[in-house]
Amino acid sequence: MATSPDLPASISAALAVRLHGVSRSDAAQRSDTISKTYRAGGGSTAIRTESDALAYALARMPATYAAVIASLNALQEIRPDFAPRSLLDCGAGPGTATWACAEAFESLASFALLDANPALRALAMELARDNDRSIAYTLGDGDATIAQAPSADLVIASYVINELTDIARARLVAAMWAKTNDTLVIVEPGTPAGYARILDARTQLIEAGAHVIAPCPHDAACPLMKPDWCHFSQRLQRSRVHKQLKSAELPYEDEKFIYLAVTRMPVAQRPSRVLAQPVTTKIAITAKLCTPDGVITAIAPKRDKALYGKFRKLDWGDAVV
Image (cartoon, rainbow, N blue to C red):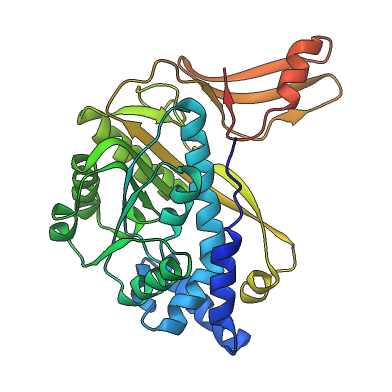
């Protein structure tokens, strides 16, 4: 059964408690400043205080969590028997990916987190205490931190490699793979630049002996041609606070993301993937699919009731067997 993309109620409640007495306008301004810094390539440098960390978490945790959950759901669909015992979260921030992995995999017993930002680490430790979860969170930057980290069955990096230079990114990908006992998951923003970073990591990891689980149904070169790029979308519900901080009116948000899941052992069957929202007309449903043989346009005519019925259930990002 797929895990819900909505932030767990316990985490939302813990954040809400910390927001008590805090000016909404101040939190919104801090969130806006942090977002602008991220978009400019500054990473988490704008997050310096407890208030900054809280504003960031309230504004960004829900969407990041939803993207990670969607990626993990895709992984579990192909490997329903995967039951990792240990997790290594690289660039963990407030622990978003860790909370997602904990929800998706009840088998997880140990959680190791790494990040260089003291304010985000402090918030993650508080959230862990509030939720009676024991985590080991190492504060530090650079290759030394991950070199000293324990290996894990599941290694994850969400919205992290976009903050690094090409050289530093390649080093981190290599280091994460070295710490991976079984599966590595990387999640990035669903932009052309995020897709390009995922492609570079994918090439590097395949050359290192990794096997792609998802979203690709093959280990060959990506068949998409510019200006097209691979990405997916996950809808999540916005809370009242979330809407206030983002000056949003819609009760939902669509987070665009791209991900990569690789493993040390080949996967027997990798399904095709829906690369865009299927188009329904009066006579047929058309779906863009990435298959083991490349990208195709699949058509289910309405007169073919069985195929049409199958295509009616398809959504962007779904696996197609």
